[in-house]
Structure formats: C-alpha cells, structure tokens
Amino acid sequence: MSRFPDARAREILLAVFQAAVKSADPFVTLAAHLPQRPHGRCIVVGAGKASARMAAALEAVWPEVALAGVVATRYGHAEPTARIEVIEAGHPVPDANSERAARRILETVSGLGPNDLVIMLASGGGSATMALGADGITLADKAAVTRQLLACGAPIREINAMRRYLSAVKGGRLAAAAAPARVVTLVVSDVPGDDPAEVASGPTAGLPPDAEYVREIIKRYRLDLPESVAAYIARKAPPRQAAHSEVHVIACAMSALHAAAECARGFGLAPQILGDAIEGESRELGIVMAGIAKSCARYGVPSAPPALLLSGGETTVTLPRGGGGRGGRNQEFLLSLALALQGQPDIWALACDSDGIDGTENAAGAIVAPDTLRRAAKAHLDMRDLLARHMSYDGFAALGDLIVTGPTFTNVNDIRAILIG
Image (cartoon, rainbow, N blue to C red; front, side, top):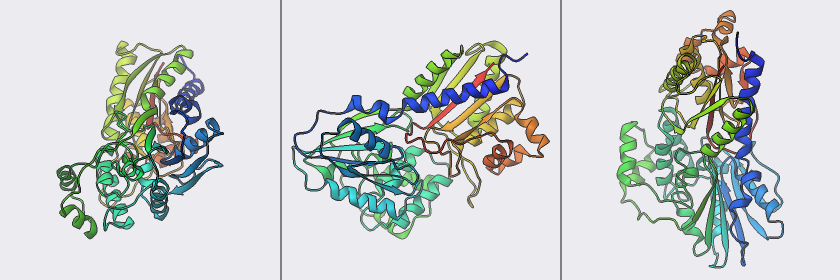
C-alpha cells in the first residue's frame, strides 16, 4: 500500500515549491543587504522579472530616503511603486519597451557625483527587458540573434555572452555610465553558480566577453547574423573594462532549495539536494532523474524512502530549425521523466520555474504521478509523440496536471522535486 495518497503527495510537492519561492521574495531578503543610507542622491535602476518587486521592497524599507529611478520588468510582473518608475517590456525576446527602458535607465544614471548612490536591482529576465544595441545594432537585429540562440538549445551563459557583447548597457557598461557615483548591485540570481556578471547579462558587474569566444558561439550554432551584427563583430572589439560595483546576492537557487528541504522535513521526508546548477537537455535530464528515483525506491540510495530529491538550475530544449512546440523546459523534463518511470509506484514529481512562467505559456510547470501514463492512454494521448514534438504543455493541460501560479515576482530559476514514498 502506498505511503502517500495521490492528493497528499501533490499537496506536499506544492508546499515544497511554495516554500522555495517564498524564501526568494525580495520583501523577505532585500533589507538585510542594503548599504548605509546615502548622503547624496539615491538613484534606483533595475532590470528583470523581480526588479519591480525589489523596487517596492526598497521603497518599503527606506520610506524616508528620496529615491528616484526606473526599473524594467516583464509584462505582467509590475508591482505598485510610489517613487520608482516601472516599465514593462518584452521577454524572452526584447521589444520596443526594452529599448525605451534601457535609454531611460542610462539617462537616469548620467551626471551623477561621487556622493551619489546607484542601487542596481538585477534579476533573471533583465537581459531582455533592458536592451539597447551597441554601435549600429538595431533592436530587431538583437532580437533576431536572441531568437536563434533560444531555439538552438544554447546554454544561458552563451546566450548572455552574446547579449553582453552586442549591448550598449550590459557587461558593466551601465556601471561605467554611472561613474563616479558609488554603485551597489542587489541580485536575485537565476544562473548556475550565481555569477552576477551573468544575471541580466551583468550591466553593473563583470565585463564584455572576449571577441574570440563570441565568434566560437556563432560558429558552433551556425548563426545567421544580421548585417549590422556581422559588421560590428568584424570591427576591432572595444576595450574590455571591468565594472566597479559592490555586489550582494540576496536570493539564489541554493537558498531556495534549502528552504524547500526544510519544508520537506516538516512532512517527515528525508530531503536530498542534488545540486543547484544542473544543466543539459531537459529530456535527457528526465531520464537521469528517473534512474536516481528508481534507485531510491529499490535500494534506498542515495536516500531511503520517504525521500525528496531536490534540484535546481536551468536546462534547455532544442527546437527544430522551424521552431514550434508548446511547453517549457520543466514540462519537457517531466514528460521525459514520466516516460522513463513507466508508472513506477510511489514516485511523484514537480518541476516549475520559480518566476511562475515555464516557457511561453501560462503555466509555472506541472506534476507527474504514478498514474500519469495510464490516464494519458485513457485520454488517447500519445505522450511519446508529444515529447518528440515538444508539445508537453498540451499533454499536461489535457490531464489537468499543469501548475498555474501567475507571476511570483522573483526568479531563482527552476525548482525540481521528486517524491519517493
């Protein structure tokens, strides 16, 4: 007899995910990382899915400070603010508002003095919501390169390297524009390793990538470069100058996974954190994780039931040249996992993007249960075909197993939890 009824297993997985997300809420984490209140002006800028929430939290903590500035976030991710302007823009592909936000942010940090303070609120998604091409590169051309990289399965660090190289604001260039003001960067990290130069493509941290590295990416993925991008890359690369910024990571995948583990212990589970920086093709990771879950169920290795396997990071989905598909990397991972488990008893799994949006649809992710394939067959769903066509969303939607949270206003990347009863 199963240790967990299906409803109880789902309740546990949802609670664990919610605990992870709550732990990364800027209203919970931001205050402890703020610098001393400034003597001069305090300019607030930001970009990413959590930037508006971070701005609202900053206003709440510093009600007496004369804050001013602008942040760029994804459509639907705005939060009410009184003193800091919020611009909603395109994601994952930048749009006209992304360019408008970048120009406004550059204007906001210009003409500052050494007694002024700039607080940069950086989070995942900022690469798209704040976008301005380097000399001669149009927004449309930047968007074209981004679309190709997203479709070909390139890891996020390579996508961000291209974004930094082609940008007038990323790769430390925003910090340079703010000089000689003091710059403090607060980061909600969604990247493996929590490198601040990678979050939002590092507008105030790190430096642009080496030109040769960029050429290797172009060659590896056979990118069809717009004329302006090809011309810019062919020219002599500008000098690489490191940004001068004090950086504090206020929330990240590992801290969220620890919060999830603590929640799991409250349910009498033995949580095992497998890592916060797991990458690779989503469907391949599904097969690997199914094997680990089976080992737990059969041999108690690496954790004896009742157990919970937790992991974070960012996987990829490689689409065919023509594009297509419905569903994000978490749903594709889960569909592959379900097929590899083949209805193994007493194993449930959840995988969700902590920002509430997995891919381009309205779901944060989904849940897999021991009866997922049986219910799919009864509904005449060919799950292998859906996986082959990258249509995981359609399968989980038909089964009623999508998780829809709406925007969570934070972003520490994916949270995966596998329950072994």
